[in-house]
Image (cartoon, rainbow, N blue to C red; front, side, top):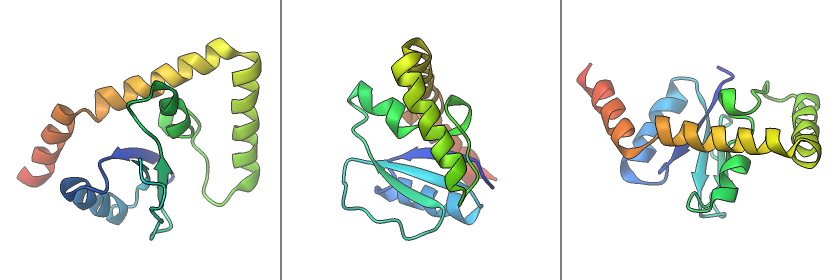
Length: 128
C-alpha cells in the first residue's frame, strides 16, 4: 500500500498498538514525535520530529501525506526530488497555495485524528 498516513501518539500505549496494527495491515506510517532520537525499525515507518502545538510544524510534518500533499511511490528518489522542488517552488512563488496546503494538512489531522475520532475508530476496530 503506497498511502502514507500520519500518526500522533505512536510512542504511547494505545498509539504503539495502533502503529503495529497499521504496519501489519500494510500501511506506510509517518509517526509524528517531539523526540528526535527515535529510529524507524520498519521499512514503512518514518519517525518525523514535529511539535504539533506549533502551527508552522503542521505543513512540514504532513508533506506527502494523502490528499493534503503528495503521494509518492516508495524508493523513488526522482519522485521525491520532484515533490521537494514543487514544495519549495510553491512556498517561494505561490505562497497562497502553500498556506492553503498547510491549512488543509492541519484540518485533515484535526478532523481525522482528534481524540474523539481516534477513540471511535479504536472502538470500531475492537468491536468487530
